[in-house]
Image (cartoon, rainbow, N blue to C red; front, top):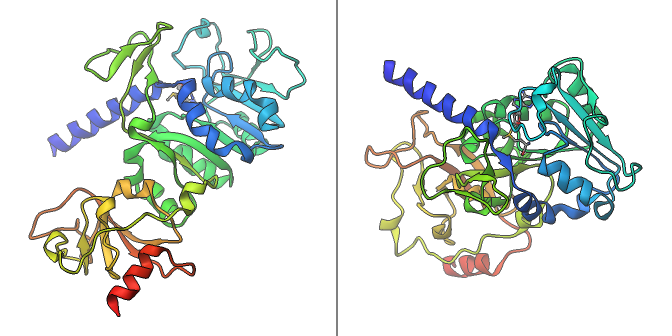
Length: 339
Ligand SMILES: C[S@@+](CC[C@H](N)C(=O)[O-])C[C@H]1O[C@@H](n2cnc3c(N)ncnc32)[C@H](O)[C@@H]1O
């Protein structure tokens, strides 16, 4: 029991450390280039972002014309720690709106920003008023509040593109959205997000930490993803299946507590198996809802973790192939093999 409590505390400490991971412009560009046509006439709100330092604000203001945006709003929580502009001078949270009419002056100074009465928490009524005006919310929110953050986006029925930890997939609230096709993974994942800028007090250690040419302290946790409900072409592409179940049954053991087989890598999903398959969570990065249906997460019929001969592989997602109208070459092979 005491050990469980300690683990929880450690987890919490880890989560709040990554609350102060600031996103690099290059990582924002790498993801946003896949959604360029989604922003025409839209109001974008970055609600965990100091407009003077955030690279999200930087990206949208610099690409305002190209994206044909209507407005950008960036708002800042007063406790934010990236103190490049001596932010602690402010008692309250603040925001800035850019609608292209301010000419080239896109970086606000301290005089341009508008103060909230409160601290600028994304859940505050003042921030929610801005959220209501917005069409698309794009940011890297505090990881320790990720569930609450997504919950609010869903409640206000907003389009979003946000950064989170890969573990977020395993949260039941987030998994439910993915299963229900209300959210999905963006394009970049893991090493596809190169690293985050961390404050001075953050200890740099190991090979995944460095100082860049501008003197920014960068950590590369390699465990983050983009979560979105903006459509991408990737999510309509079939996973190419090359492996076969029949003849290789030994590689695909049955679960003790579910009528399905275990698959250790997404690329090993067999093309000739029609039943339920348990795949690793990274499958979601390749998931095309027209090709597969998500059945369940992690648990067998007895609601215990899926097991094979008493042992539990790492979290698995139970999926099943859909019958596709426009069959791919892979499924054609499947049909001829079975006949
Ligand atoms: C992971 S950092 C990312 C910052 C910025 N969005 C970026 O990507 O560079 C999360 C930010 O949210 C701020 N924050 C923490 N709690 C918040 C809250 N309740 N409401 C709004 N912002 C919050 C943190 O201070 C931090 O600046």
